[in-house]
Image (cartoon, rainbow, N blue to C red; front, side, top):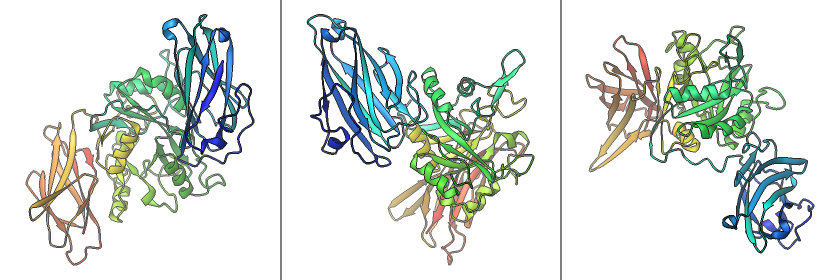
Length: 509
């Protein structure tokens, strides 16, 4: 078998110990500096197979430098029409990392998840081996192969194709637990067991959710299970996260692909800023959970008392938690709404989200806790993909449906006319309003017959229509525009019960 390396750019010469290095035996690791955070490097291993390779194994070395957090390989080869078969496997510096035979042509290995049949975990720098097995190749046949290798230092999966590329509203749950922490359920014989991840995905699908985040406490071991189960739920986006559970508050890190630190206040994680840096480096988002709940023996560390907290680096606040909803606290001090609005009043742009905080996915009636998907967070996103959902949360065009009734919609747009031009701002955006100028607010409420709208604002002068679906907005004090303002909408049922929570439009001059 002849093998060669195809390199892209001079930067790979050191990485691969130079393309002219003969291939056949493992080589020493190249003297390569760490791959910078966020960087990627790609190269190809190519060669030809002949009858001499029939029923043999070949090991092709390549170098993984420090800093790599994810490795992806795509294998293609010729001769399938002539019954050539090539199996695929991988070895790291410590031994076998996995073997998929002939059933996979694409594989990935990351710190927390890997293609089934491969082992997740840290990617040790040094010489790795691409292992090719050749069960069959006929006499007289020559089959060329190419293994495209991609090394990355951001940990993000490389094959997370969108489930849908159509922009629209996506309904999901950002806070659930499984057997990988304290989730439990009945095994059907009256015995409580650690509840398998698949039960949560089944519940999410049955609740007609578009996405579900698994956020087990201080661990990401469920990421590997999610990678294995995701193909069985083709219409459901599964997102791996961690509930960072500290002595002074809980926060969900959503959209992780590798474990992060959780021991806040220790040498491993001295302060919240260090945690925020880890989350940002992972391209994930951080959401403060159930901040209005009391802290103490009844709920240790449940309320948010972390000092100091830089709210400019917080993406979201869980203003609606399934546990508090079930206890009858959809609003008021125990809910997250006062905590959230306090930060809004100080000028921070934080997106309100909800999460069921479900610990038993088989409890679909709410007999003991809030079911998966109640409340539901509804996010406007450009596609149904993890990056798009996280971007949607960051944008703030989000509302919370406390009862998870598909078809409900709560949205808001503000427009300003200046001569012949009109500018519009959606929920979550910032409206620039000159002194003395006025904007028109339009609120959309659908799928909730008999519901009424309620406008909530800060530092603004509001003139509302009778149905609250339109309003005129002005600065509260034309002589003091240094104070930022905001306006948002709630929906209430005929009895006055809160059923939907909207996010703000921010107003500045």
